[in-house]
Image 1 (tube, rainbow, N blue to C red):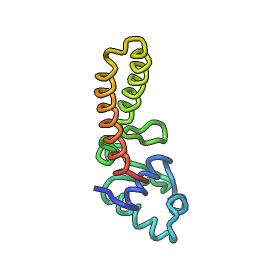
Image 2 (cartoon, one colour; image 1 turned 120 degrees about the vertical axis):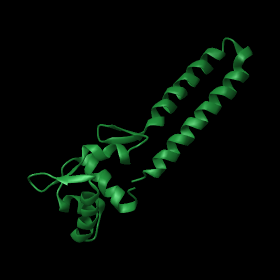
Image 3 (cartoon, rainbow, N blue to C red; image 1 turned 180 degrees about the vertical axis):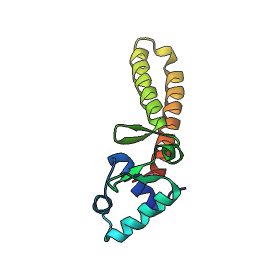
Image 4 (cartoon, rainbow, N blue to C red; image 1 turned 90 degrees about the horizontal axis):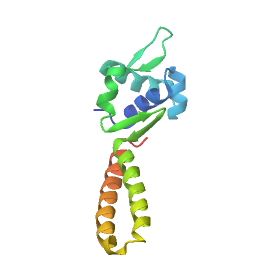
Length: 134
């Protein structure tokens, strides 16, 4: 399991595509190139990255699922999968709350169920997001 700067280095390579040692050093704000090389070599040995013909580092496609379990990559953004459900539930809550203005008899049920679902989803989203914090 990747942790700390090695995880951050992997995410950097994954998000920004093929990059050279100095690119990683500057992007990660490492003090020396040898520190970037250390983390990249750990990733190479574990099979999370590979080097292309130009000696640039590229994220290995097979390893993405291991590291990003519970996440989705949308463009260069990595989001917890529960974020999509949290947004969907939040929109539904807003819609039904608006509709409840015309039929106030079921408002208490709407509020309890909707708030519970939204809180659970947002909690899970932030918990997972924090685990991958970069």
